[in-house]
Length: 352
Image 1 (cartoon, rainbow, N blue to C red):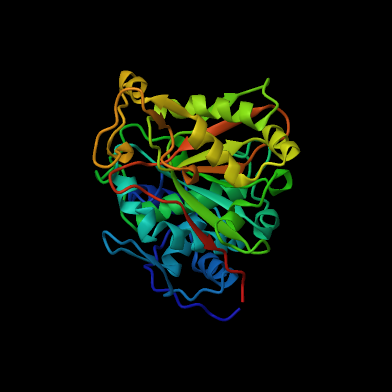
Image 2 (cartoon, rainbow, N blue to C red):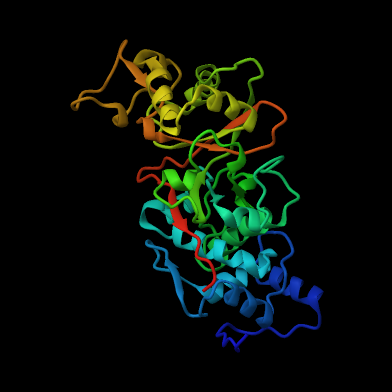
């Protein structure tokens, strides 16, 4: 490996423990200890992704903050990433800094959204990113550290943190520490998420969502797609009408029923859009009246007009994640501020 010239400031410390405390003192952690990023470790991460230190991975549109490969690699090492995780981190940075993701808005909003990463393609298995049992739980280095790396980059490079007032989350949720899973492609009844979003089936990709707290539920009785989706609908109603985007986390046991019935991915959103409906008066009684997103020809809808929980069929984004035991699925609402955030997918580049 050729010598990699880094431009970041070096901090002299006596040992790793002193380095950990130095990062705490400077406010560069998420509240947990970090791995001191030595020049050798940072260079290895850059090499693994074939990135030059000064290569720009993204520019946050609102503040103009620049994320270079070197800064991303430093934070990836701090998070505990292995060098081979760096291509995923780099692709995720390009995704979160896309205009349509609206990163600044979601990170300063009181709703407390977190960046959810969903990885697809061969790299998920190569890096052992968990897509199965307890995929959203602890115990898998790739999931924990890749997700954490993005949070540290948001804090340390883009400057959004709670201790200096920019992060305005009223409550926040644990996904703001780290939130990264792979889709369980072995249990899919349809094409993988990244293929549905325009990527080639043999490519690897990461999709980022501005996710709010997940809502888990069990349905151990339904054995048809319609019955399972009716259970999803019950969890959609509290979100109000006209939801712009929501992630439907379908467990493999539920996914089997979709496969058996021959359903396509697009049918999921279509069914919910057509059937997860309530009269406008019911929405109003729930405290969620049909607002501007549900207006028709400039006239506020009211009375008995049936209004869908979804803005459109495309608002539902189904993914298959989880273990094969237990019929537990989940919905993950996404940030719905004034300008909103849209999911973004980026190809994960392999080393050249």
